[in-house]
Length: 225
Image 1 (cartoon, rainbow, N blue to C red):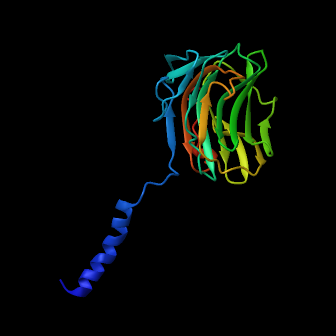
Image 2: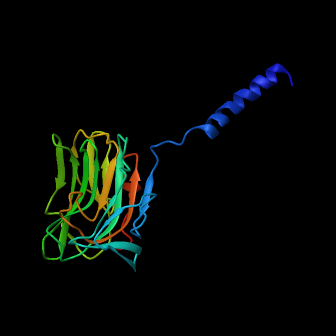
């Protein structure tokens, strides 16, 4: 083969070779199916109490009793991400505590992502989300935005590097500017805050972690309308 042809062929193959041999990006979406207690994603959690698997629309999910059920997963799926979206398919049930932390992500430097419910005791709940550490604290909460308990919702918290926003079933509720992270290695609790207070009563089916701030049209919506 003439030298010029070999050089031309090499220029075509080099990008392909680079793609085939490239290391996988650490900034890839991670999806957790919360349908068992012995494995969440690729991780073996520490189990508190006796969370129970129930099969009901939209499918199998893990239910927490609101007093001592929880999981501690030994990983931070947001590690190193300057932007992110956390989506959760969950069902808040009546009869739990007034304040409940159902997802708590924390790294070794105490950056925290906390997603919570507030119950009014009359069949209603509203969303409370938080980004921060000891110095920076930004909650999003509005008790006027009440939703009925006893049904499934997709809730989402996004952070675009400057602004946090939370959604319910793809509808924006609140937003605020905050300087946050990026987070480092850490762990994630489901059904309770990591210091074992503010237990959650209800079901968690799915968690989805994305390395970008998704737009409203990209967010999941509840299968129940």
